[in-house]
Structure formats: structure tokens, C-alpha cells
Image (cartoon, rainbow, N blue to C red; front, side, top):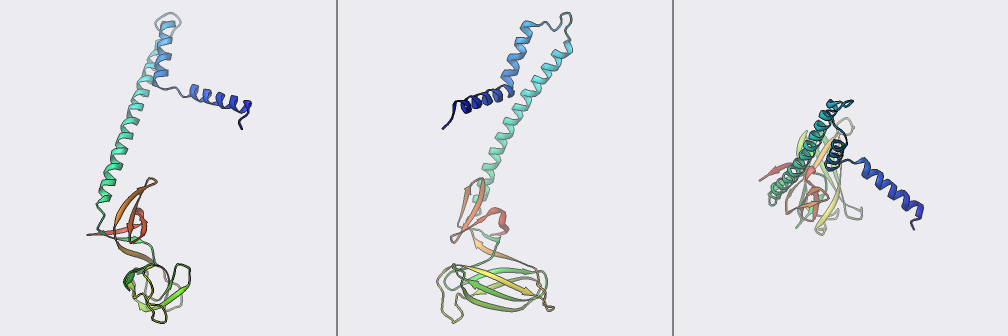
Length: 216
């Protein structure tokens, strides 16, 4: 419920805001009114003030025109960028992330090690249960591909879908080795949502900002 006091305060605030925001038309009306009531060349008047006011009006008009042009340019640029990103459909991209997207008994993920390390991959299902542990042995520094045949610890094939992955990488000295994981995907669709651009692949959604590499 809005009280009379609140309504009056709101009206006052809106009026104050309107008075404080002097646009080009308001500036021009004020200048015309001044010319009607004052002679800038008359005694006791400073002609320089009139020149300054005219200069201010010109600057205001130019600023508003510049803002209009910039807004139009921004809209055109956004449209052009959207048209260009739509061309990603059907292309293969490498995105920052981890996980196995199992399909027909095949899944893979990229791993890049800062230095040589002993690597173990733990696979979890959607509920967080460990379904497979994949020792990768000793991997050299640089890029490697981690593959999974979609079978659990007992050799039973698991259903297609997304599986979480945890990577453990330790050097010969027992210390953790830094690494980066990524996924290689084929783009099925490009969507524009909440001022962002997203890529869809196999039911997964990734931000365009996560793309590390684009190939044909």
C-alpha cells in the first residue's frame, strides 16, 4: 500500500529529476526566453556570456548526435557479430571445460600438462557415484587425449550421457602438477541469450568466451 506521503515524495522526486535533466529542447527554450527579456548588447550585459551559452548549446547538440550515432553503430556491430558467429554451426571447436560426453561407447577429453606427470582419471555419474577409475600412467608435458570406452569398473557398458571427470596429476616428486582440460565438440547450434552468445553441442551449452580454438 502506498501512503499519501510516499506518493507525494515520489512525485517530488520525479519533478526534481525532470528539472535537473535539461535536454537540448529545454536549453533552447531557456535561451530564447533570455533573448526575449534581455539584450546581450545592452548596457550592463556581457556579450561573452551569450557566446558561451551558444557554444554550450552547440556542444550539447553535437554530443547528443554522437550518442545517437554510437548507439546505431553498436546495434549494427552486434548484428554483424551475431551473423558471423552463426557460421560456427557445423564447425569443430575446442572449449574450456572437462567431462565425458559418452556416445555409443566413446568419449574423449583433452588434457594439457605443465610438466610430465602420473595421471589418474576418475569418472562419476550424474549422482556423483564413481563409475570408473582410469589410470593413464606417466604422461609427458603438453597435450594428451584422455579416452574412455564407456564401461564401468566391472566392464559393463554404461548408458550414453554426460559424466563428470576428476583428474589427478602428480610429478615424480609426489607434488601436484598443474594442468588444463578442454573438450573438442562439433557445434550444433548458436543461441543468443541475455546479451551473450552460446554454443550448443550434444545437449551441452558453452559460452563463446570458453572457446579456445576453432577448426573446420
